[in-house]
Length: 182
Length: 273
Image 1 (cartoon, rainbow over the protein chains, first blue to last red):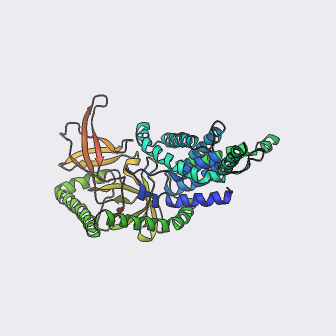
Image 2 (cartoon, rainbow over the protein chains, first blue to last red):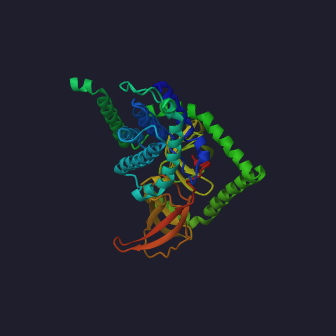
Image 3 (cartoon, each protein chain N blue to C red):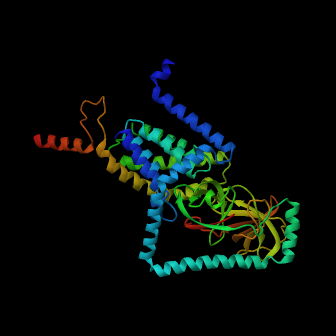
């Protein structure tokens, strides 16, 4: 996916996160769509789209909803960097690693976000933040899983990979074709 | 220099992190106060989000129609507003002349500028709310064009919600009272001579202590703002006491307070100008 297309996806997520997504809130909790996009883009693609767009849209998010500007930007960047690291150890095209990425990314983002606010004197305790985590992580993982399913078909060929011919579906087709020949 | 060129991605990431850290520090220094950049971003963001906000409001109304008949939903809303009005009337009635005279003396001592007849109310819808973090900061569809200013008090039909944090044309950003570490003075409604101080407890609620540890406060006691401190005027319903404890270390009588406002599902608010 090109940076421009990715930016459009982020803009749409930014617009629906605090508005339409409120209709899907369970117990006052909604998935963090921007975070889910950061996780999926950083985990799925080699290009630093998740990192760059996460920093930019995190900053915008804070200007719109945060107490201090820049906190979401840093927490999104930390999450994207962790996902970039994680994709070296996990197969980023399979659904199960995507779920693992969702859990790790969501937890890490919450910890970094809370940690910065705590340093700035916010009254929230770690227990209060952890209390809301199971529901939030579950919701985020569902969103990450759905986004991963939708986007993994568009994985681009790695420049240095002479065997890799396209996305997950194409690779699967090639595998099936090879089985038929055998 | 060559290293920087060779590691351009690492350099760009480090530079972005450093810039964001500086932004946080600058924002912290001004305690998130509004600035030109914030207002410009606010206008642009609101322009993008407005159609989606209306779509969300439409879906809300449709779901209400689906779950219960439209008439019932409207009646429920009207009743809720009426209950809020009656609560405020009850509080005003309770604040007798003698109590007010005493409060005025106290207020003068503490250099407090309280409510007077020049205050008015503006009703607004919550158009954007982030439910993905523990913080309860939201945006309403009324702003400077309707006379709203920074630090104006925000209430819903149940009681105190918080204060306006930043404001622009057609929008205002509100921070809830449970997210702030500022101290707020309160009266116990059962006996207005009983005073206390409270703040966000970091657990999504409020906690505080009584100035006189001998007063017999109990669970269920209703609390109203005392006006001491300046931000929140007197007479706004804050919540109910859900726990009373004697703190041997302080020694203070501490109280746990359940806020009156339902912060997880705020749809409509009133701003006190």
